[in-house]
Image 1 (cartoon, helix red, strand yellow):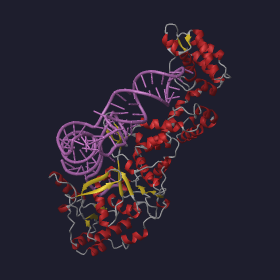
Image 2 (spheres, rainbow, N blue to C red):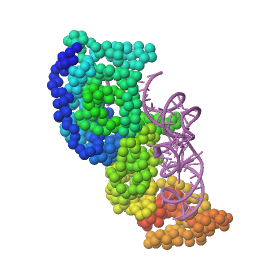
Image 3 (cartoon, helix red, strand yellow):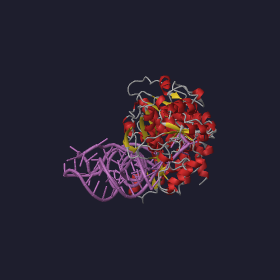
Image 4 (tube, rainbow, N blue to C red):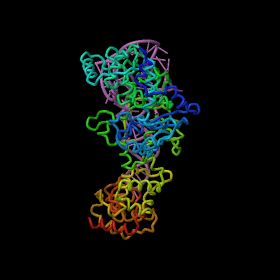
Length: 552
RNA sequence: GGCCUCAUGGUCAAGCGGUUCAAGACGUCGCCCUCUCAAGGCGGAAUCACGGGUUCGAUUCCCGUUGAGGCUACCA
């Protein structure tokens, strides 16, 4: 068989060779150890936490080594493409702090930057074909004319006989077809797919070092996989090999679902005579299914909280989400962060080998905890700006009020902020807006009941409080008056006294302030009451007392 | 079915043959602080899936079992 003739017959229009592309896409000149990584999504629209997890790994590996991270669009499957998915992806990742140095920047190839493009795989057809042509010349690839029906018949037979399914060995009907036979099919107008001619031996194992998992051992691939589809675009396997080679990727970070096809990939790299990148197979994110109680992979249908848009909608600070992802991405990040609370996360030494290799459970509790810490370090101004932007983006009814009453909001967000022990009760925008709702008459609702201890004294307490309340009092003067009021009515000045001798008192000062707190906020729990009243102002304080009085 | 990966408390995990029969964080429980809450401080409960080896000695190495996840497309 004259492979050269076959190659020419199949790809007459392809004049460039892989060697030409080596010139066009030269090795990158970067400092020793600088990693080139990439995110390579298919434009299917939905972006979830797992994508961010992977993207952050890519971004961190690149930037902590002084390398770069690019975005390549894997649009070789026209059926799955979703209109406008890419700009959304770029925006969303950008929102969470992932910016690409090279590759896709907008909705199409025109937007791309970098000299290793095109970055849309659908624009790289000639490059793939040149590589396939090369393989054909080497006798390592061949055209296959099997129909879908033929293939599924073979598969059915294999399954019935409990053999491994697929096109390999004797099932690879066109593996050794003569050039005449191929010509006949071609002349009949049939369009072949191109298959790789595998020389793999399933009894032979090869070993490869994964950047995350260490040594991995797998059997050689025997399948004559399709490398070029009828539509003239490559399958993932081939596109990955060609692109990551010519784009000079050093670290291929991808999900562990790719591990089983690694034998195909190394075979293809070998056939092309190329060096392997460092493969880094990370784990999938899991969660506990509420209904079954079982651990399972996050699903986009069942788990809206895995969609990145969910966090944006809830108003989580992007930094909080990022911090959380970092804690599950590199196990010592959390300790590093505790030791370096204010240091930029760029300073953290990220490494692929510190990534987990067993399925990580998503933990909303932990996210919220991390978020509290992040927000505790923000200024009132930052909280305000963020919440306002959030309210405006999602058309929250509060948006107008927030814009009009900036000073008020700043005072509210400033309660116990800064200092050694800042309050940690703000988690995400939606929660924050609800949390401070009692400052606004139109949102004020009574959520908790008055303490039972004061059941018979509610009226007296509130009326007396109205008399003694003076906004000019400082915190301790004010509280001294509360104590006095309680003592006068038979309540202990200190909770401990009441606990020791519950029979001698009706209750204690805490109960008195609880009455006032509920009158003010509608809740039995709140930040410092005196501060709240200072922010509310005398009119509102009196208004709230009257309202409470009217509801007794 | 075949193949691959993984396996330390409820969760994230450190650990990489012997001062660790196990660090830290979240959660949980108790106490302290305290006019409530959020924090903060202190303390408790809770883990090496199971069975064989190798070794003077294994959570750490090997094998098997079990379990979990993944792959098995002209999808990525």
